Length: 191
Image (cartoon, rainbow, N blue to C red; front, side):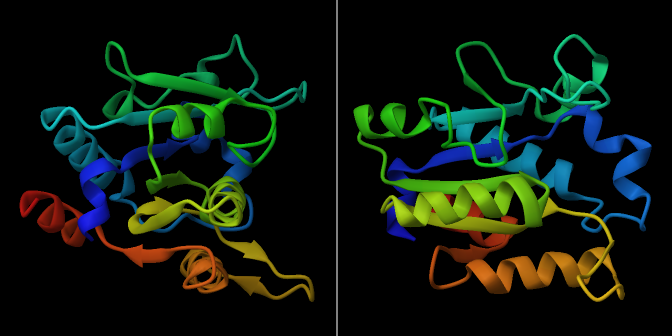
């Protein structure tokens, strides 16, 4: 994990809207400590003055809790951007589509991303797939991401842990490596 010395911490869609009722309609979320794990990583990145990028989903759907101008569009307080931290608004599931994320990373010479956020099988997965395809060394922090239970294509209800684990399985090795908060914190402490 020596690449962490120049890694950007990417926090994807950790907004108030993630607690909206419609997210949990099929069942509860997993990783209830994800926000506190993200906050630990965020504190470490801030202390070391490492690059931090907050991704905010600005939905264009009228019924979305993520639509700008609503409280749901605001970041969750425990992981809210600090002064001078980059905030990139997106309108699709990938943080690279329709944004200047790639350009910013390239201009700063950043080739490694530590990705956290929500939801694992949607915006996190879409962003990580693109990061891998664009040649970024990407690490997904398992316990600093979360998702919700949902029915699979055949109608079987899958728990949030199952959805999360399958998403990580889809990404692991081909698009990214997967780590934990404690592993990342230990690696950063040894830099």
